[in-house]
Length: 219
Image (tube, rainbow, N blue to C red; front, side, top):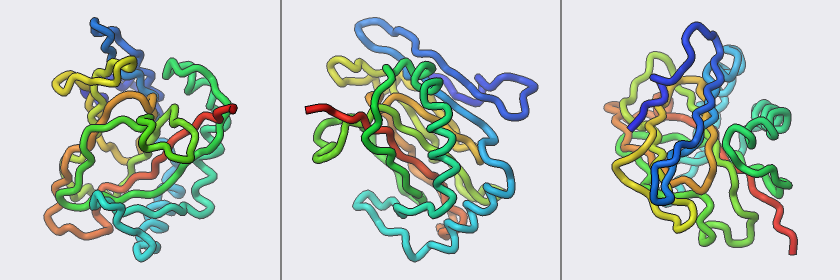
């Protein structure tokens, strides 16, 4: 297992970390990663935190105990603009063949005490009814400082993308560092460990913006 904090380049104020895929034998490989720390300037980060808190009533449970809001308002453009500008570079670093985009999903989530997300991959066809196949998944972590929750890290498992299986004890762990963007191929299995949040209040949860790039499928 690897932890992404240990891989950050030293001496950079805003490091972009490109973690290459590594062959693990028998068709399994670790996931390539694209990570940007200190992604938003502080005023924009403060606006996103405030927007999330102000729109608490718009968050709904999704059946997995996650709280989700499908609207980032004007703040969503900071993510769509970045991904539009860097799309080809991100594809290159994630070893994903460039593709015509059908849809760019984006939403806000908040994980409170005890909430987790079990192991899954985002490109499973049964999750894609009526939609294009997901190619790239991304998350942007943010929270109030000082951080009140514990755990909630992202585990990305070594995966055999041909037969859609993974090794549960071989993974890369990505910490939920404030103001961190992470992207990875949607075909890799991943999970979120349970959150520990003593007071269990909304404003101190593990917040994230996230979504997927979907490929346009020609018929």
